[in-house]
Structure formats: structure tokens, C-alpha cells
Image (cartoon, rainbow, N blue to C red; front, top):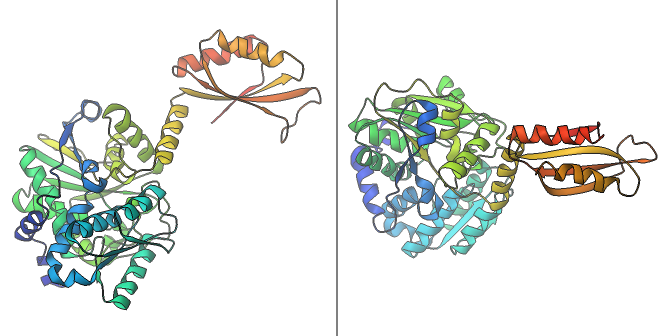
Length: 412
């Protein structure tokens, strides 16, 4: 466990100094109102848009703070291990300060994040199966090359840098009552909690993890960092199997509560932010919204504003499209049907004509003759249709059955 001296290094004065280290590079990100979330939760909701930060996440704050603290020690270069956001931040900060940088990311790291690291001029190594393994490899590299290792979260300077988010929240929201923060290794929530509750101890700070990788609760119960087995999640930016020793101690001291959400809830939150708030937010950044929508948060304060921290927006176009497509299917605005038809000329045209009368839009059609128990004079077609919602989807199915196609199976 960390010493008391190490814990006390994360304090309001140090957070102010760390914030100053980022002046000229770190943006003061906006807080945006959300009528949709406020109405659904019955309490005023503001979104702290760290997804609009340089490099697309809050991590830039901690990286710049650490480089400032290292000073001339960083002249030989810096190295880090990360799922992507910390990697981009360190690469960006190193370039801004004229320092060489190497980055270790898991082999399955998102392509968009890996490409961004290389575009920033860092040397990229895709190694290890998890963030924890990438961090360990980066530490080995630092020792071998006499470089400075920058931990993604379990470092006082990094934590203090992230605490700048909390200082901005206090300045931007006079009636702040609660802050909801994504939790991976714990650096962001530790910095925010110390910054906010040192000045306003009555403000609640609630952390959110994904169920697929949620080691904090078990670690708090055990009184020490405890690792979990799985780290595969749509929220890859917080897929940290084991919290840091320093961050765990700070969470225990400063954080009000930690809750969890599941993958489907995170995906729905990403879509809602895209549709209603016009914000591109990655899975890790959307977990606070997911917790609110799923009613996983404790009862809100009687007065004041709840701020949800959107910690990052670095999501690949492919992932975003898949999440949106899945949402369209669940909302019945995208209808997939498997229909058996006689294998005779003109019968597919008759089916499509029946669908055309409903106003549904045909997106895709495929003949399927293998893998199904079909009559020798029968074939199947898989249709993907765009509808206006559940009622329209039901009307489309009714029209298909009225046309004589009774074996139409919906695919979900």
C-alpha cells in the first residue's frame, strides 16, 4: 500500500500546479446541458465534455503534468503503456515538449487509437493481451533504455493533472451537487474527488465501471488492489484489470460510491449521446450516462446539478457504426426478416411488391439456400428493411403475411 506521504502528494495545491502545467495546451472543456437526460432522471444534468479535449480525452492533462514534474529527467525520452487514450496523450505532450516517446498498446487495441499515436510521432509497440501487460512491457523498456516511464493512473503527478477537471467543474457549475466519473485505474476519479471535495466536501463523487471489468468494489472490500480475469468490453478505455495502490487509497478516502453497468447499457448511452447531444463519445466515456439511464446511481441530491464526465471520444468509425446499427435493430427501425418463398420466377418480385406498399425501405436482400431445412422447390430470402419504428415494423410483417408469406421469421 502507498505511504501516507504519497497519498498526501495529491492535494489541492499540487492539483493547481498541475493545472498550470497544461496552460496553452489543455482546453477548458465545456459543460453542456441535456434536456433529455434531465427529464429522464428528474434532476438537472450537465455533461462535462472531455471528449472535446485535445487528443480526445482527459488524459492530456495528466501527461502534461507529469512531463512538467519530470523536467530535465525526461530528456532521454518517455515511455508508457495504455489502451490508447493515455498513449495519445503522452505522445501529444511529448511532441509539444520536444521529447522522444515510445508507446506500448495491447495487440487488440483499437486501430483508430493506434494510428493516432503513430501520427503524433511516437514509436508504437503493439504487445500484450491487456492494458496491464502493455504497462508491464513499457516499464521493462524504460529500465532497459533509461527512459522515464509515465504510468497511466497510479502516479501522483498524473492524478493531480486529471484533477484539473474537478477545478473546472467547481468554476463552471456553482450549484454542483454530484459528479459521476468513469473508473478504470482510478486516476481521473481520484483527481476529481480530491479537487472537488477538498473545497466542497458535501458534493458527491460517484464512480462507474463496466461489469465485464470491475475490480474496484472487490479491491475496496479486500483493502488492497484485486485483479479480475476479464477485460473484454466495449469500454476499452477503462478496461483495467487491477486498480492502482495509490488510486485505491484515494478512492476509499474521497469517493462516495462506485457502481457498475453492462455492455448493452453502455452501447445505448453512446447512441443517445450521438442522437440527442450530437456528441461522439467512446464506451468508456459514456458509462456515466449509462448508469443514469439504467438507474444504477444512488438517489440524486435534493438540490443542485449532477455533472456526468464524458471522459473520451476516441471511438473508431466501425465501432460507432456497429453500435448505431444495433440500436436501430433494437428500436425496430431496422427490421431483418427470413422469409420462405416458392423457388419460382417472379415470386421474389411479388414479395418485394407487397413490402413496397408499406413504405418500408429495402436495404439488403440475399437468397439463402444452404443451412436451412427447405423444400426442394423452396428457397429463403433474408431481407433487411428500414422502418419508422415498432408500429411500422408490425405493419410490414402484417402485409407480408397478408400476401401469403406466413413463415417470415424476424432475426435479432
